[in-house]
Length: 511
Image (cartoon, rainbow, N blue to C red; front, side, top):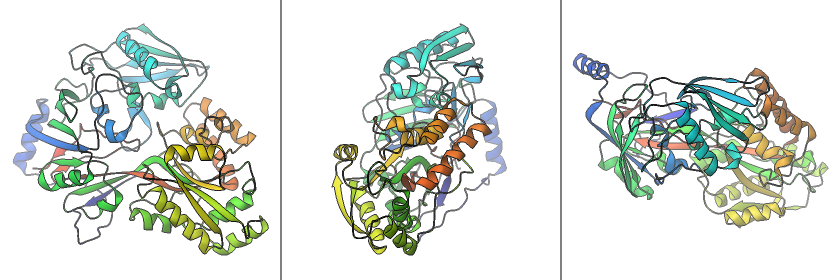
């Protein structure tokens, strides 16, 4: 979900409105634009500055994606598939289509014709195979460990043999880590922009005039590393054509002029229970705590109205039509359940983390204080322990305390990347299943969903799993994260995708 906050003013509190569907152009400008597009030539004088918290290293492929640093890479390096605009769904990119073998272990992709790399080489299956084999040597086994081999049966087809059926592999291929590139300094891609120059502080992108899907509307884009938030915000006032990334929620409503975009992210902030030890091995005890929490109020107080409470374990962009986990806070029912579950008189120890996270820019300390306040209002006694992030992970691994604040950032926006990682029994030893939740039925459903091709059948399996999880409440979904960016008034067509990338080919400048 994407919200637009237009013309932000420091003395007013604007409401979210729908982005304008069209702009008014004079006949002369419209004609000029038509001529430019028909000639396949961008506006030679058009340029944009993107102020990002950091920049990637461009001497090889990335193994871990960081949207604050790597968000622009899909504009240079493309994969066989990509995410549809503003979604976590897949669509063709360098491949025009694919087929899955009956045993679910072989994905075969048909390559798009007449695709050129930035160095002039033509895309073919051998180059894709070589690129991905290099990726397999460097990327995380978590993403590509299921790949047994890659082959190129002919010049236009590439096949991936998996060691077991794994439907989320298709979404993994849409990640920047799976992009196709040729060796070089920097590597050569096929995207709508090529790297014109790069150093530790700035990367200059130039429109690739031979791009297979049409020339970008902007000639030049400079991505500059601006770690300091104050400087990123200042650039919005000093420069005419600026996109500032990773704007804190607290600043989004006080920026003067321009437009702020807010995209619901594929990430989750949650309150976890140790389900394998007393007292929260009892679902009634877990529900007592859940009913004490007013998540809507929590989001208003901490996130300035830019983020709404989590309606379920999965963000809507990951799975539509899921039953909501959300229940209206009811302190009276919470107290009754606490009594029957043996929580009365017990002091609960709540663990939290220091600093901010992508799903919680307010910080772990502030979130813990709000959770403690709400639990105390419902009659619970709560003490808080705060740790650095790595120390917190160790404390949770040894099941210190009673409840804890944690979160998850999805790589690929697939339901599997949330539910299997967080709640499958097999993931307890890897540290992902922090609650130590174990349910044989859930294990079976989640394993089955990994092997069923994307279809209504797969979605139905996840909804069945969510019905059980919403009853048993191994964790309480608090809120989803958000990607917040600000653009100056002359820029149109910029959005951040739920996984944190942003695409620049459709950006245009308002005359």
